[in-house]
Amino acid sequence: MNNLNFVRLDDRRVLKVSGDEARDFLQGLVSNDLDRVSETRAIYAALLTPQGKYLHDFFIAELAESFYLDCEASRIDDLFKRLRMYKMRSKVELEIVDDMAVAVFFGSYIHDALSIKKEAGSAFDWLGGVLYTDPRLTGIGARAMIPTDSFEIALRDEGFSAASFEDYDELRLSLGLPDSSRDLEIDKSILLESGFEELNGVDFDKGCYMGQELTARTKHRGLIKKRLIPVTYEGSAPAPGTEITQAGKNAGETRSAAGSTGLALIRLEVLENSEPLMAGDSVVTPNKPDWANF
Image (cartoon, rainbow, N blue to C red):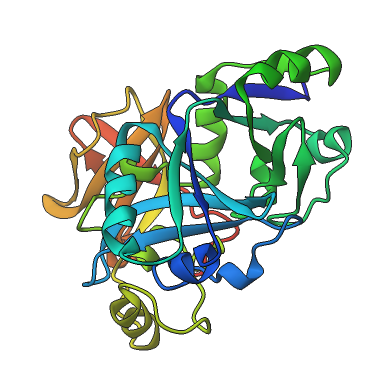
């Protein structure tokens, strides 16, 4: 595989939030601090239920005094409706941007090739859109929200090779990064079980936002009993949602996978036991990522 790889993510779309009160509007809803967002910095964040459970996650970048959300394509209508419900009389406009798409760039020298800082969230205007180092983990590379007609320019003029989605997916999984509702359960998952603190997706000093109380209580009381962890399978990866057991007892559940690599939500207590983990007929080997604190 080339060291300068490019994948257009057809499973992602772009939602624009604009207007005089757009920053304050998002600040009161999402898990991260909108004051950190500028035309030179993007963030990762989530929208939660009032009870602090996962609804949506997305990347937020600023371009021309508007905020652009890189979000899950299959659920963008739901996100749009939820944001519209909370808009009320705020001076905010919401738009699903059909002529913009999402791309990822990865490889050994990707930041040098793109002339972008290897700092989480570092961003700048690019090809009529915005390019930014992934704010979760610099090792995964960079992302962009750009007009759809800019993709051919990126491929031809910037020297990138088109990689497959599977290539990117395997890299993502090996690093332990969740992929929206493929790995996070709607109305059930808790951010800190899913690595959001270490992956720069939650701010504990920003003030109130929807679902803040549970998120803060979970952190300060040390209530995390399970974590989303990269795993390798001996044999074929089981279907997402397959129960993981240890000595016949529940130890967790599988999530997305590519090849023999996947993510799984695993009880932390079982990691201290030498008994093997099983998902159906597959042996499951957890691989704690370097960035994780547990």
